[in-house]
Length: 354
Figure 1: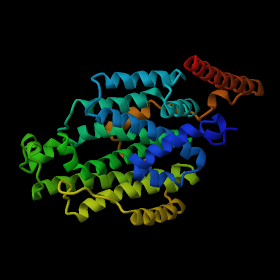
Figure 2 (figure 1 turned 45 degrees about the vertical axis):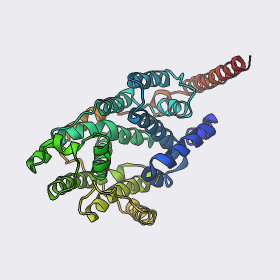
Figure 3 (figure 1 turned 30 degrees about the vertical axis):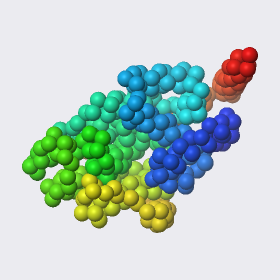
Figure 4 (figure 1 turned 90 degrees about the vertical axis):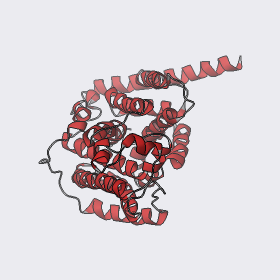
């Protein structure tokens, strides 16, 4: 039973289809890479990314209420109580966090990053920017790794680093777009070292050779993280490696496109073509065959350690792999939960029709 896709287990195909439609529109790079994940992993990954995307859209909405973060936290409370809101992404995520033992602290950290966005927070140093990126991107990397059934600390660290790298590529791509929304993510210290006053630049954002050097520096740092993260591929299930390698290559290609534009991401936005994405998918398949062993000699990155620390080093389902009697009790409990959900849904519909 546990090897079947989450859609088959719980009959949530319609919810997951809604999540998939959301991802097609909102995260094309991830959607491209996810197509080569095994179905049982892909369904859960789609549910996770769709929920995160919904939250991101809520926070970015200029008309969002002042208590939008509290609304998000309440939705998480309901998800972890297994009483999710009547929203496809919430229902799907409730199944994912229960099945894969996703620590609540990971999603709380994600929400904290959204709170920083909401407050228009800026970052003085690259270390502070990594603190932010760890919350909005590395959290997802850890959760994806747990969905793949891996809880090894070293692999989780490499997943966090991939999240950092991908977020930095996004920041390098979106300098101009963020500035239009009065947001600045480039390290202020780096800007000042190039003679750029961050506050004045944000008033009138213009591309310049000085700015290009800052963007180049950010991309160079991201490339270092992409390189480190690649040592974690072989710690993943073999049938998942290609998809994660593809995600790494596609997001890294965003950086390459910014380079081709002479680091000008103010005048135009770097886009990776569909043809290029297909070529990178082929490259990812080759990489999955020739992967290196996880390297445990890397120095730790302080920004991500709290995310790795909250993951208990246990195998998924370790809490019910005992005797036959214990497994039977677990199955009965699961069936009771499913039946309760069906009953609650039935009465809710009956009340609406009354």
